[in-house]
Length: 102
Image (tube, rainbow, N blue to C red; front, top):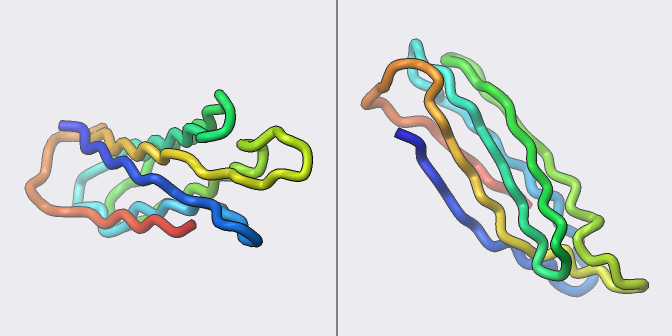
């Protein structure tokens, strides 16, 4: 079964967001496809990334969302981050770890 997560990331005044998602502690014999989709609040821009992560390793994806707000002198790159973990090998009852930093 696929696992889905949804997180809203707010870009506050005088800051920037650079979402970084790490998948680690993948169970023995497992491989997951980590898929990310970031939907910008201020535009129709959608940013997609993906990678495969196997057991006893970790994988990190970084998203550049600086183009979310196309208005001149505006810098609100807030949006929804959708995380999908798709198992590419047979199932496991063991857990993995997902860390989201922005």
